[in-house]
Length: 349
Length: 256
Image (cartoon, rainbow over all chains, first blue to last red; front, side):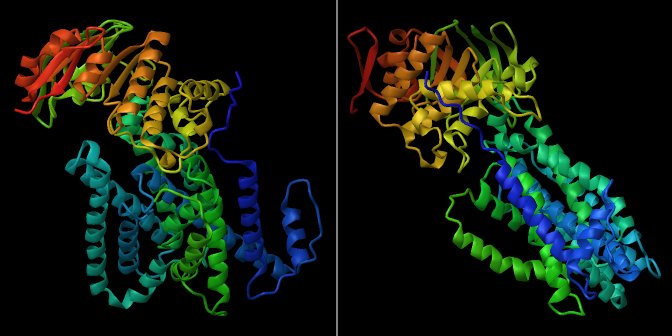
């Protein structure tokens, strides 16, 4: 028989290599740019020196060394982490809801986080430190849980996904109203609260990274591993069940992982829109629609994208800084249009 | 693999859809479920697949599919829905490969054998040339064969097909029915289809089950079920029934 055995839609090494290269380039650009001028060679040597079994003299001064390792590196890593998490969570939600317009903040994660952060800033005197991200994290998960419970009470069966989305909208409005209510009473904190809401990674440090890393790792590993199953779910719950899947269980697990990833990102950086919808969409256009491709590449591309966004945020109005959420929309919007026009690939929308 | 249904009751959203339905499909035979719109034909198939909560006895090859985990059930019975969701951008090959899901470890990937099975199925259905084609670029007849390919890739011995000839012209209807019949005979498959076209059902099925108002109104060989009186009673239609060259009934409409 002349049967030619074809490979299934899956991530090709070349795609992975390109995405990784773009990410590395973005990270290096982030490390090398900023108020203090660090020498390229020195930065590379100092980084190499950090590798196990490698010893290189970087020639950086103590100040330069501190700028690199205590300010730039954590910030760059945090931007990449947040971008990657938002993008992979967006892709996960899109798979679960079979809707390319699903957003990481769809199920009330953003409004929950906003309320949590607002309450903390408004009620706790002085510098609340890590309690703001903690409250945002709790609020985000709480918002999603509330939406999920409401959705389950209200709808069952085939219309379940749609009901869940509507429940998310209801929860978002409700929590948003509560946030506004609190703001009315504590208008003197408005600026601090808005600074958080609009997002940024300027205050990132190693401690924050260490706190969020385990959750980020677990959620993204779960999401990336579910690529094939999300491809099967694309035929709908009933057919997927007939094909041997426990559709409801898979849906719940992916939802939980995507919500955890979103909560991590929101807690660390505030609300940064756009990444979770646009990055997976661009990946789909350029690399293919299978979730085996979209999930891992969204993680890498989202990281690279937000790193570049942070670069723009730092450089555009230096020495001031723009909020990341503003830049994602400002830079991302036109970029998205360019990709939509350039890519001729037919993709489900 | 014999399919047996005993006193099946199904209620959807509290509304009874099927009541006391019984039927036996002998191994390797073809049974067509016929009946007027809304009679519960599709519901019957979905209940046998374990997709709906229901009361009564169901066995496929002696096993109750409702007692099995989905992945074991999917190795027993394959299903092609009336209006399958065909994800845009997915290739014919990858779609066929979905049929291998019950054999792929939960978080694993498909093996060389899974790919070989999918390729072989496409070859058998004359779809090998379309393997790299995306689902949204197929004609109606091709689409129907691709859905059949996915079901065959499950390598089950029972096949449940919901309206496999919907929206096909008469030539493609014949092709699909001939194809199902050939596969049934070659692989010894037990086939249950719902079907609208009574003559088509009568030409191909060994037995017909007429479901009307949620109950089995008639069952047996086509020439016994497809009579002028039965069709008038349950479909509210006037037809003329003539035996075809092989004795199977051919129905033609008569204007009242």
